[in-house]
Length: 156
Image (cartoon, rainbow, N blue to C red):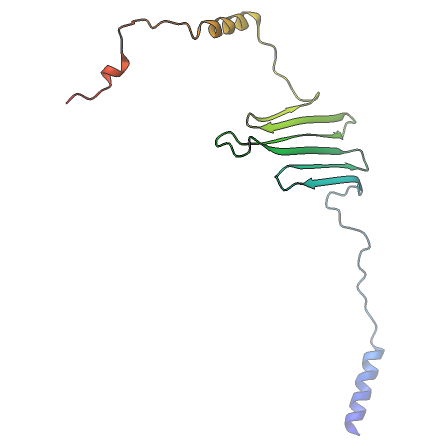
């Protein structure tokens, strides 16, 4: 009887206690405090030979696409991964930005109207460079009898 009385009082105490619920936020945390931008379209293709292609477009107009493949597959010291693509977005000041690029055995090269370009080479310097290029292979040694290898050999 005593056990039944204790059990009943515990039950009454539990039911009389106020219920506390944790209110969870119903929105996704956004660390940059920017509006959500949906992905409008997306494609992603990876092939068994290592080639690939991907692209996406977002709701605010951002776009990116790229494709890549292995160039000279199986040729030692001539294999190179080639990736080319582009991306575009609108800068905070409202300027549309578009970059096209290629990365291969010659490095990464990007082009875009917003990227800085070097100034043109002055005409006199260009003429000098052309002259050097034309005469580079035809230059004769100063002393035709000089053999640089004979002075570097050890004599015993």
